[in-house]
Amino acid sequence: MKLTSLFLFCCLFCAVSSCTDKRTTYYADSEIIDGSTVIDIPALKDSTIIACSSVFSDVEYIPLETNSYSAVGMIDKLEFTEDGDMIVFDERNGIVMRYDRDGHYMNKIGERGHQKNEYVKPTDMAYDSFHKQVIIWDNFKKALLYYDINGNLVDKTESDLWYGKLEVLDNDNLVICNSHEIKDNTNALKFFLVDRKGKIRKEFNEYNTITGFQKAYNKVFSKCDGHVLCHTEYSSNIFEFRNDSLVPRYHLSFGKNGIPDDWFGYDKDKFHKMIHTNNNITYCNNFFETSKYIITTLSMDCLYLCIKEKKEYGNKVYAGFNLRHDLCGIKIIDESGGLMNTATVVPVAVNSGKCYFVIEPSVFATFTDNLKEIKKQLDGNHQYKGESISDDDIRKFELLAQNNNPIILKCTLK
Image (cartoon, rainbow, N blue to C red; front, top):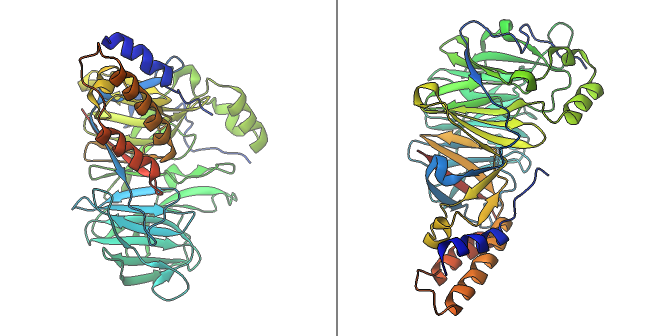
């Protein structure tokens, strides 16, 4: 069987996943703030699939170990220790856990409950590499809880300030984004610099964002190679915290596909109607940066992953609403262009030149069935002299399909 024939055969098994109040700012989204670098984002309508091999050099599937202590629903945040351990936050289930780099369960970080060393309703967590601690904000107790890496409580600070989302800035400071009354609008987001005791050191009034109908802001902060970036939904402006300053860093330009400024004067229902009925309208869902790439998930008619080289590296854009897994590790499948597509386009983290995504185990069940069928046909074709698919290959993906916890997809950028 020729490779081209195999490619056509594989295509039959490829299921391309389809995408299934007033707000104002002190700066209009169309206005470029002084000091910002403009990033032009082209129209992505014709972009459907990103082949992993086009932008990644390696792909690794990491199943999170399943046991009676480590049931994970959704992964809302993923951070890393210096040793490569993964700190996983599942907000819906109110749990924080540590896994090693291979996905083996290490320990819980604290426990859910009403005791002094427990939290009731955690809304965010951050890993503090300066003190080797995990910081959790309990919205019920209105407290910052500091745990060591083994999950033991070492400090606790109560605060009158409601912490929405948080990140560690340096040895002494945290940055937070919370709901705060601004100009008589109680549904506003505001950035603060606070010390480890929760005391406000600085308020950043110059970049307040009135967001009376903002859906969520769980992706406000991204920590990339030591930099803390921040971004709010619907905005085209990306900021960076530097010492005690909030500095304009990037402006995403979508051209005629950006949200028109006058839409922000509409009420909640009309605004969302305009967004949902204009499929070309584009805005940023999350934002990451490496030394070579800008990585963002964009909302249009569906979610698109957009990886753009920085100008000095060529400015090439890789975009699509599916990832084609042509680096799965099975030679005959990879050389044929890949067999499995996943609608996995929202990175949960970017760290040390690697993008991390979350995949549901059920995705691998169909892939495994397809591998078995291809192996059967290859083994039954006596004229085919090439490499087949081994039982070990199939077993590897069967185990992924059987895992009860999410699978971490670690993709190494070129």
